[in-house]
Image 1 (tube, protein in one colour):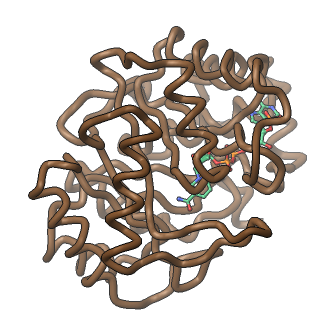
Image 2: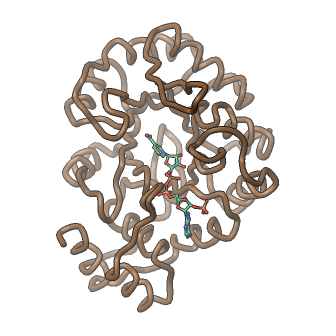
Length: 287
Ligand SMILES: NC(=O)c1ccc[n+]([C@@H]2O[C@H](COP(=O)([O-])OP(=O)(O)OC[C@H]3O[C@@H](n4cnc5c(N)ncnc54)[C@H](OP(=O)(O)O)[C@@H]3O)[C@@H](O)[C@H]2O)c1
């Protein structure tokens, strides 16, 4: 098989397939300030300096914390940097995640994202479904998507994507506006979206897995460790390289609050997985 490409089209731009997810920069429970503010800023600066031009964020991380860090670290933004944010939740005083789907809440969220990121227009806004916070669940998205489409017509949003959604919600979304990306939970072990990834690949739509390294429960597997050892790589690098080879439309946004981990993750872009390694890693979910 040919080597995976390093770039892919997202929202009319070309982005590196290895991007960066900013959620880990907020405090514990994605709430409050970072545990090490200097390191958080250094991670963002190094990500961009090393070629990342796709950053995933939300104003509900912190809340506001990751957007403010991105602005402080990287503004004025390089021309090729695509910042993807997401809306549909707000945070309670206790850090809880509260659905925020009304026209007023969505409109306020767009303005808050613009203000905290220091932008006049948001490149891509994902509507994150909240019918079940932990995974896709059927429910109508027409009303909130119509609000985002209105804000797009007003010039506040360039492109719209969906997160934590089912195939039928994506179909519903496409009847309302163009859906430029899908962001769902997916990794080497959690493969519920295998068919969806291949289906949207046929339309050239990027699939952006969240929790690519297992999120709050880092991936652990003896097969993954063995494969990584044989390739003189780390398990996390092998897990990212597997995603890059799994489908051409997969764009990665691994999260880290550590410069050392960022460097390790970036190096996964040049890790070639031979066919036998790919087959071994493919077998993990089945076992
Ligand atoms: N749409 C949604 O609903 C949704 C939900 C969750 C996340 N997201 C987005 O997806 C992005 C990725 O998800 P995520 O950050 O939650 O999970 P992830 O990328 O799967 O994993 C992040 C965890 O792995 C650790 N890690 C990262 N690189 C490592 C390495 N090289 N070696 C060892 N440990 C490493 C991080 O700890 P350290 O900080 O110590 O490196 C952190 O605990 C987020 O940043 C966010 O932008 C979206």
